[in-house]
Length: 355
Image 1 (cartoon, rainbow, N blue to C red):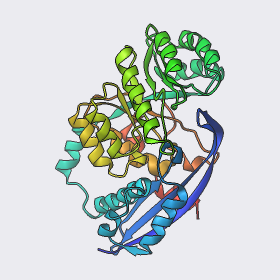
Image 2: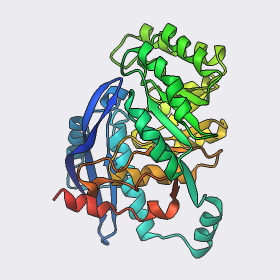
Image 3: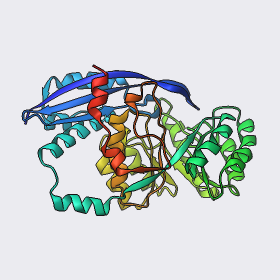
Image 4: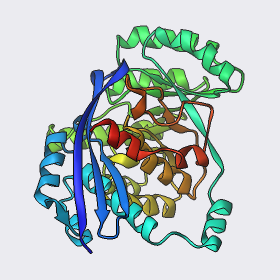
């Protein structure tokens, strides 16, 4: 079956720059893909790379799409190289959607899905880095949020550590705090934080250390050993994020017996179905998280989260409103996200906004 491939590259400014250990992030770049079969069924996907995580660049994703040409097939799409993981993810999502349009589920299958999939999932509120987090906790708590994610590893470690008790004191009763260091700490700094977290309402510490693909094999092994050591030495769980960009990474950490949490950004994983199946088989603790993609990629990623058969945990999708142009946003950040909110996302509207 022939499929007509179209793609549009985008550059969308954030309403407010996102401050992380990797630096200031002011805009999102990516690639939207649109597939249409000869019967007129249409599917959309989004390649939303984050190169410092180890994905391809937007330029590489665009070049890969050009290689496929205007007319392609599912077989040719399946042969896209694994190094173009975000592009493969986008194309697979579009192919799957074309298939759903052509062969919609029966009433019995739909009913089964409604019984199996949760009607809603909790959402974690994303706090800004530094002292600015303090002013954001109360208004989000009043909305009903009870899980909060605070970006650390951005400023001076001692200053941030001094703020931890203030942040914890500002949380509503029974709330949990997630700390995300984005790989910024050395082992000693991570140990200081984990010692402090042990008696505080910290659900987990995300990616305390990390060695990216540009570093040597020895540096990456050292970072991995550090993570495993920290996970074994302290009661507060450690979560992997940058360390699990692809299915191969996930398989490696499952094989190593990772005892902590896997933070999964479905938009970054080429063979996301196989990766999720492996995590379910391992009975892994999983948190699904946004890659700060547009509504097109968010819809695909959230479908993965709602289909998860393991224990549900608050989603890391409390990021919207995110873009200066609200047409790119996913569902408004609220304490709970409903399956119907995901179903209402309109990829065609985002596609049209780029025309």
